[in-house]
Length: 229
Image (cartoon, rainbow, N blue to C red; front, side, top):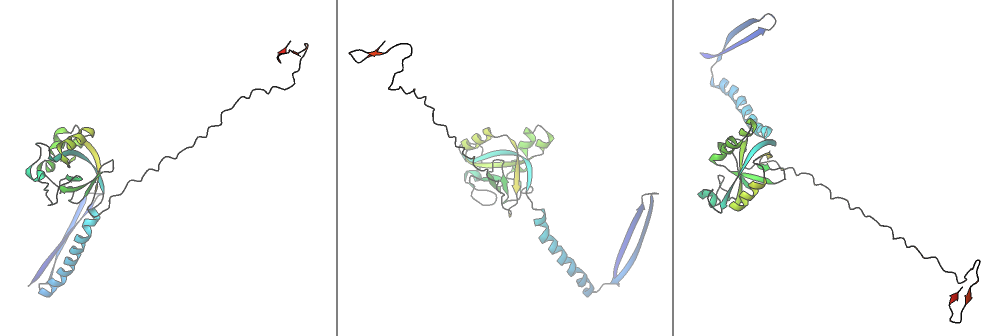
């Protein structure tokens, strides 16, 4: 007895549209030693692929997101876990956290906004997974297919204030958990230009000579030491 290995192949000639096919069967001994010899390298190769593949696909990406808000205090709009600062990963919710769909954005990722604010993806929720906000408020197909990111705030007032000052849809950067957030280059401060103003020009009065020059007339002094003509 042995193990049958069947191999088939096809070749299609594009020029004359012919299809050639052939197959053959090769029987090898079905011994335990042969099976172990074949399976061990396959297991090693699969293990290497599984170790290398995740880092290869874990890369920073930019995507369109419908950003919603939720809060712990200040009124309705939050569940019991949120009010107690509990989240899906077991961490204590705090400002700087957000909820995501972990199938699209892994926990521990950083969601970076255009102003440089980075949020940690630590929570999730039904409304985030089914993208309800994006499907209802999107005006284009691109917006309706956007992911939903729910940003956490401590109070309802803070959450609604931020939401009123920012657009509902925005492009964000998603940085994988084991990758550092690239800092935006700081703009150098503007150089101070010193303007030196020239000293004000002073029009000097012409010096009066001690000698008085008379032309065509005579000048005389009166007894009261005044000049007269």
